Length: 286
Image (cartoon, rainbow, N blue to C red; front, side, top):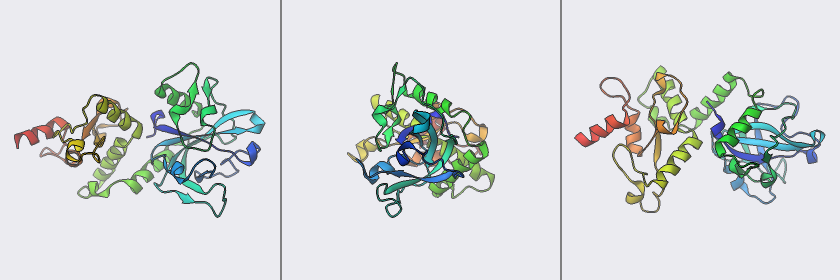
């Protein structure tokens, strides 16, 4: 499921100069088109947030006299929507799903957070929000997440969004030899592997330590594909989800090449999924 760490982007929105709250009209749906202005930016700004990443939507609503954190949403498609015919000043959009929404618009920002640096119509990295005193990205994400405590959609709706994202974007070749309830298990596993914030941090640390090689076979993309392979590797979750839901930590992720990643999603002769060390032994014994 989504966590505070999935909050990766922040967007400022406005409707009628702040006289009316944006995307909070009566009967607002759990999916809508989040639009980007043509001022300062182009369609690339709309495409920055990736599927499964959360966007914090904030706005300055005149009647509340201050910045309100009104939505947490996630993109449902990797393409932008052409909105130019409906509103030429806001020509680019993304279809998003609502994870949390403050229906009356009143959800003041925490006093120690400063939004001046993210007030334009760009897609800003969440770390661009300033704080006094300075806090870590993780603390910032948790602080924002906690403001929505009473405003999240119910678990069933969020779960449906989660699986909808998976169904529409997963590589179905991974599932080609899997049937029945096993399909559901492996889908949940793969989606969890794509928790972007953790994956980015795992790769960042590996780059710092010069450890961006496959943990199973030692394959190094940059050495084999100079230039194009720089910084590339896949990320595998080492805790099978059929053993129960757990909080994902960095130590539960292993960086592997594409071939070994596919093999880790196959079962051994005992009917269990291969672990990294086990697959490494298979390779070394060959």
